[in-house]
Amino acid sequence: MVPPWQQWMDFTAGTQIPKEDRDKVDTQLKDATDIFFNHLNQSNFSTEISPALKDLAVGTGAIMVEELPFGSDKVLQFTNVPLSELYPECPPGSIVESAWRKQKIQVRHILRLWPDAELPAALAKSIEKEPTKEITIWNGMLFNPEDKKYWQVVFYEAEKAVLFTQSFNKKRLIVFRWDVTPGEVFGRGPIIQSLPDIRTLNKADEFILQNAALQISGVYTGVDDGIFNPHTVRIAPGSVIPVANNGTQNPSIQPLTPSGNLQLGELLMEQRRQNVRKALFSDPLGDFQDPVRSATEMQIRQQELLRTSGAQISRQKTEMVEPIVAAVAEILQARGLLPVFRVDGEEVTIKPTSPLAKAESLEAFNNTQMFMSTLQSFMPFEAIAGSVKIEDLPKSMQEQLDVDPALIRSEEERAELAEAAQAAAQQMGGQDVAQ
Image 1: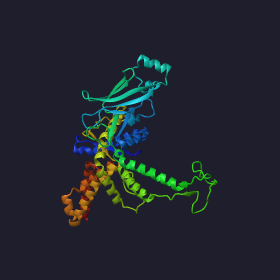
Image 2: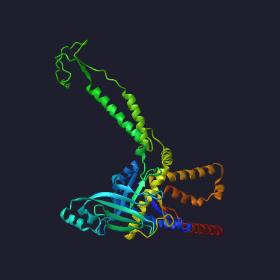
Image 3: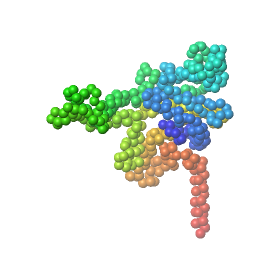
Image 4: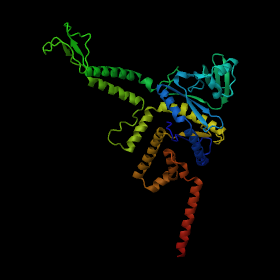
């Protein structure tokens, strides 16, 4: 959904923009999208979102969006908040609005993280005398329904003192969940759902390793006859073991016949592995060692993946993608790097363009192709042109395939081109009459 070094979304005109102006607005917003990803790719977003998505596989991920001080080489900084430090508050709706991070930091880092922090006397003294002393800090992002703002609150637990507060229009501590069970704040991810298979795999793997060790080293029985002592004997390469009898009928020591069925264990493990791989999307397009597949089959597999995990992917769009984009846009707009607009779906909306989102759009494109092919099978082109807006097909396909809108002519350009063609045709007609 957020592949590194790719533009996984576009800013597009929202519902409030008149239909006749949307093409022009989309072209202008294309530059804003390029600026957005230029700063995002220069930041540490890719390295910090990766561990957050691993936490999401368990159920809940979280990431902090921060603005670096003026004069820094970069503008944005992201921090993954591990599950062990995350304390989300129960939301009134379906999206987590407020959350806390309980973290241990050295006192010398407080003023570096929050230069405007107000320090209690005891804490200021600790910074001077014990700069490496660790303390517990609660760093919260709380939504205030009265002013519709998100307030960052840094709280020192030992002194019960608020060190720093700051307000934002958009949420900066973003919590996103894979799936939610009613009555629970934390989410449940595919790892939790696959936990029975994972535990069975671990136990079966343990048995197989024990069986393999027995087959490699062997198990022996020995007779305590006064010469051979089974309690002290050491079986190792090149060792000589004193025995009373080497006869094949009644030896002092002999190996046990190994038992067990490794093939049954491997079959059991392979079935469980397939379940875990499917749950964790390890092979969303199937095994690539199979015979070569067509591009159409790959598209169908991607669409099937979307259908089977549509609810979870839609939740990530709402809880992860949109808040991250809104927070980054707010920072860049405050710096004057982006034009001021509202990413609210009405003025400007977010159009996902990740590989999964493109697979979703391909279904609409395939439906358009099937529609046109069906019409062409029993209608002449003139009849189709009289029933279908042929001139609007390029724009529709451009949106479905996420092609650069600059390649599509606007209505004004098409009108000028039609007038020029009509004038050229009239000129050619006048020349024929003169001849």
